[in-house]
Length: 411
Image 1: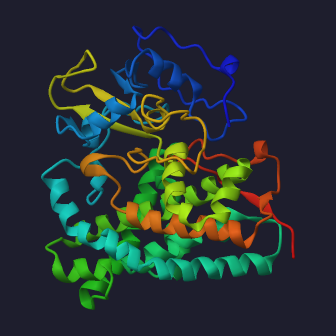
Image 2: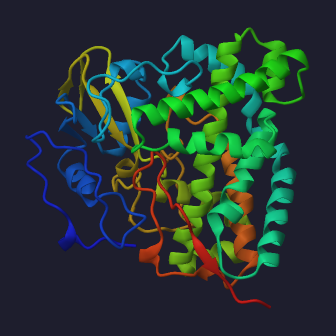
């Protein structure tokens, strides 16, 4: 979907600090806030005022965002950052919980990453393709038995990655009711601090039970391997387990649901993917670029850094707009067009640098299998409500849809 330039909001001049644009154009659920493109056109790096009064930066250009993500002079430690969204904590954030790799720098991050990298290799994830195909087929069968008119999020998009991450980690899927709500709260930008604390405590208590069981009798999965072979403390293993579980539940589920929404809204793209199975890997990369369901990141300068003719001073936070970077016409021609034939190599949908998504290969396998299979099984699949009535996850760290009502013609 294209946004109408006449509806774009007016931002202050680039020499004046701006606030982070979050308002998406009505009727364009797949496009970033239009004001991000306006700012990127003026400068890839703009002075930005944070809700707590801190004055830092907003990076919107592809080359600029990618450069910062790969630069060790910028920290990922939460306690050095300022929160860019309204309603967050005032002042710097608390340190990352134990095991939360997204809030660590080297060498601490390096230690955890090395322990886990071998568990998520391309080869190991590709070996899981047959299991993903089996789980996908089972849920397509269940959809068909249920008949037209269902919420694709709960019936298809959520269960497939949830089953896979549970099996990979060694978490009983039957316990989903115990941890899914906690994971949802942790991903919400609107959750009150006490709600987030309760969710974190609940998830940690659940993982502590699993870790105790794995210490006693390690199983043949990621948690079992780490309990048996690593030097992680119980607290670290609990933290790593909760971090991987929450991330594996939410991100791919939203890509399956939001990706389906985008394809149904662009029927010629859906038709191309449906008829050409070999197009699937390329289409997944393009959907990751086009949708950018993890739209924003934050870094903090550890020292003075000169970039794009600007001086970022030590201690200043930089908000990274991945969604603006992935729509940068300097990197991707006609970036606001979804084109499953495009080579979207180099997109920032999985991040970049040492914090690039650990589970990206698993996500690729799940998306490459699930999306084409859904379109082939239900060639008349379509929205059951007007697109404007699909509820969007505008208050969540991971963008997407809360529900996706769909229907199809029965044979």
